Every structure is written in C-alpha cells, then in structure tokens.
Amino acid sequence: MKKLVLAITVLLVIALMIGVGVFKLGLVPVNADVPPSGLETRFIPIAVHASVANHAEEQPNPMVPTDENLIAGGEVYTVMCARCHGVPGRGPSVLGASFYPPAPQFTVQPSGYSEGELFWIVKHGIRNTGMPAWGRLLSDQDIWHVVAVLRRLNSLPSAVENSRSKLH
Ligand code: HEC
Image (cartoon, rainbow, N blue to C red):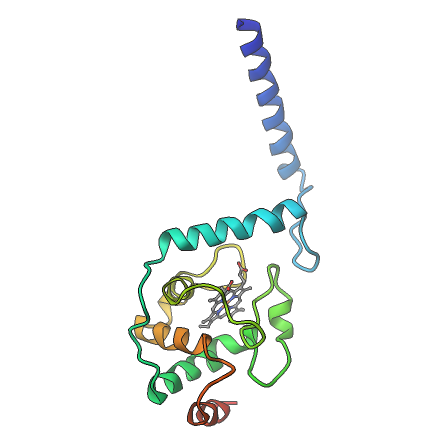
C-alpha cells in the first residue's frame, strides 16, 4: 500500500514538473490571431459564464428606457464601446475581431446575459481579454444607461439614433 501511495505521489510530482516546464519553456502559445486549443475554447467560456452568474446580482435595470435615458446610453456606447462592439448600420468592427476571444458584435447578435449580468460585466470587465473594467470611468448610472442600449441597438427610437449619429 505504502509503495502504491509513493508511486502515485512520484507520478503527480513528475506531471506537475512537466506542466511547469511547458509553461516555463514558452511552449504555450499566447498570440490572439489564431484560435486556441479546443480545451481552452470549450472550457474558458463555461468558467466566464459561471463566474458572471455567481458574482452578478440578479436585478432589473432601474433605468426606464425613455428617449432621454437611451440617448445617454447611446452616447456612452458610441464613445466607449462601438469601436470594439460595432456601430449600428455598419459592418462588424475589425478591431473587435482582432481580439481573442473576439468582442461580440451586439449589432449582429445581442448578448444572452441578463441586464444584471451585463451591468456586472461592464463594471468589472473580463480578465485576460480585451474587455476593460469600466467601473473606474463610468458611474453606475452611466452603466445602466449603456446596458439599456445594448439590448436595443438595432431598434433604437429615431430621436436616439439622430443624437447618436451626431457624435460620429
Ligand atoms: C478594446 C475593446 C473593447 C471595448 C472598448 C469594449 N469592449 Fe466589451 N468586450 C471586449 C471583448 C474582447 C469581449 C469578449 C470577452 C469574452 O468573450 O470573454 C467583450 C465582452 C463584452 C461583454 C460580454 C458580452 C457577452 O455576451 O459575452 C459585454 C456586455 C461588453 N463587452 C460590453 C461593453 C460595453 C458596454 C463597452 C463600453 C462601455 C465595452 N464592452 C467596451 C472588448 C471591448
């Protein structure tokens, strides 16, 4: 029995050393212009979704989607987000596609996260990706405004569209 425990321990230590060696020798690719291994593409999104669900508060957006609130959110989106997440009426963002993982194009496909989760993501960002934590630059109110817009990018009232297009 003792021999078995010893053999397993030795095997585990060797496996750990090989793992550290692979990292230390620079054998793990870190470039963002090729998709990573199947393991990474399959498991990292699961971890991100589970972490967001675990940390975000499930709360409705306190901002009523009036023209005024959507205009405020449209301004934030145009100035801070559109360069990566896409401009309504234009093609997908080349900058957004240059990240791995790429920035989702909300004009093509709205996010599947709830508004409470979207608020948390925008405030805290997603580590090791191109998605910054906006909590130091935007107030909670600004973030709720932009979250309201994320959901409606392709169906904004014309008053909001007009004010947003003036910012370009
Ligand atoms: C510099 C580029 C960049 C900017 C600017 C940027 N983002 Fe992102 N964002 C990303 C990337 C890259 C991801 C993908 C992260 C991932 O898949 O884990 C992302 C992911 C997200 C997500 C998660 C959506 C989902 O369904 O997976 C939300 C929400 C989001 N961004 C909102 C915003 C908002 C709102 C702004 C502006 C205040 C913004 N982002 C600005 C690059 C950016």
